Image (cartoon, rainbow, N blue to C red):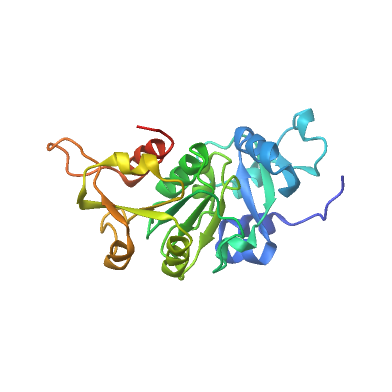
Amino acid sequence: MSTPVRSVKWYRKLATRKGRLEAGAFIVEGDRAIRQIMAGQPGEIMEILSIEEPLSLYRDYAVRQLTESQFLSICQTRTPQGILAVVKLPLEVYSDSLPDNPGNKVLILEDIQDPGNMGTLIRTAAAFDFSGVIMTEKCADPLAPKCVQATAGTVLSVWLRRTGGYLDLTRTLRNAGYFLVATDIGGTPDPSVLCHQQKLALALGNEAAGMSGELLEIADYRLRIPISQDVESLNVAACGAICMYLSSKTL
């Protein structure tokens, strides 16, 4: 399969949001993550870049071999695996509207700025059958290299919306019958509330500042995860993992 011969500089620009938007593409690094994309969205892969001759499973894609120095100049990971994919950018990520069918469980992230936390939360959402993730514009960009790496290839397994209109989208979900649970250090310690909702919207706040007053005001329930008195708080990704796991259970 042939593809336009692009400069190494073109690929390097995909590390920036501006470059991704201009190119309509983003980078997924590593064989395992690429296989995850291939399993769910094989048609979204535009090109495979590799140092060595890639495995035969990539034969249906355009493949370009690079020198080691060229490859390393594109990679963002500390320990490159020698292969990456150029994947079509889902432009609806930056839109202000929900999908026609948002699914039964939606994650709402408010100002999650650490890309590792962001990617881990997206991966966890996919693991526990959340259909989508709404995030504020102050959240780390989910298609940035460090976020994509932390998702382990699941970044396209859920729909994503990164928008300043996140509160409007949240209200739209509530009006459509979703039960909004907001995690709050001053909330009620009853995680079982997550286990009995046909339609659930789960909201998590900023790593340091927590949840905004605006989001807490519209929440149906403010939840505090009960933890030892010797520990002040949980990492937001750990808190999200606990809540999303509980949402999949019947207690």
